[in-house]
Length: 428
Image 1 (tube, rainbow, N blue to C red):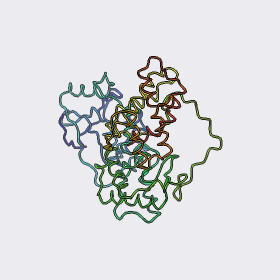
Image 2 (image 1 turned 180 degrees about the horizontal axis):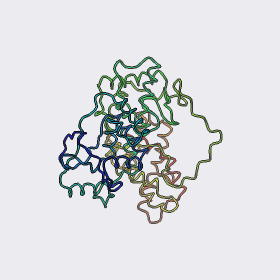
Image 3 (image 1 turned 90 degrees about the horizontal axis):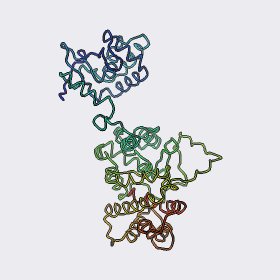
Image 4 (image 1 turned 60 degrees about the horizontal axis):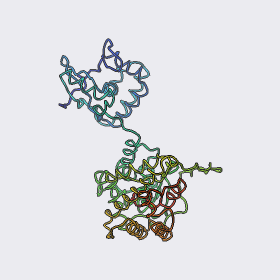
């Protein structure tokens, strides 16, 4: 797949684009793209102007000393019209593109990186794999909701709150901005999910940035973080995945640079200028729990090594208690064991074999880290003992006994008792 810079003046929007069929010339093809996709074409043009780049190189073929676009006609059209607004199909669009032309920062590009293929059969083979569905894995597989969520959590994009902008505004009001500019993309990636935001003392629950800990402690933490990022002591590469974010935040925690549990506010505090979300006077009654793990359960910031545990977690959010109690009981046992083993390995705990003993060691470590309190540690120790249906031995009997069958209400109770332990252990 040869890639090369192609002069934009030599790129031709395909008059026989498969999106619309054969037309008389390039001008007609441009007009047809706007007839079919007007708002999406405008959105794409705005994005290209803001980014000053096209990240996905168009696929082109050399024809009579010109390069005809076979994939990327919308991208090329928008870029060409930003550069030459007078070529837009009508006066309204010409005015729109003149506005974008004036917004372009820096020099205008003269060339564009393209994938150049001269064999028409190769071009068609590429198009077939890109645009005719997944073809049982041969073609491109679109991201499902889970993949989109993974990306949003990894990068911090896709949410309604611009966390970096809100943090910068907050620090400005506290007169604690670093001397250098804050790299928004790096800060957004670090604070990509509630787990990481809560560790530095903020939350975006309710659609606004709120303080969850003492204002001075949060100010100090955010000042330290933004200074590290602005001075490039910590870079985007260091925070590329959840594991990297945890390493950095753990270092800050060990240095005492993050807010402590004793500084947590009774309820989140809205920074000045940000209104509190209105309270519901008559909340709706909670629906009956029909799965072991409810759909609104606390979010786990999964890492790559937890793929199997994540798959089990998600199955336990879909399997119905009244129809799959035996399967659910088996999966609960597997999830508890995976969570515990992963935590033991992550924190290098020395503990004898046996699930019950290892659960006790993990719970004690969580208490020592102030993640759970003494009361809940006692609850976990009661679960470990064979003094109730919901216990570690009970889970083992669910698996091995031909007579000991789980009941729907027992499984609901099991989640109520194990929720905090599972969330804390899987979050590590």
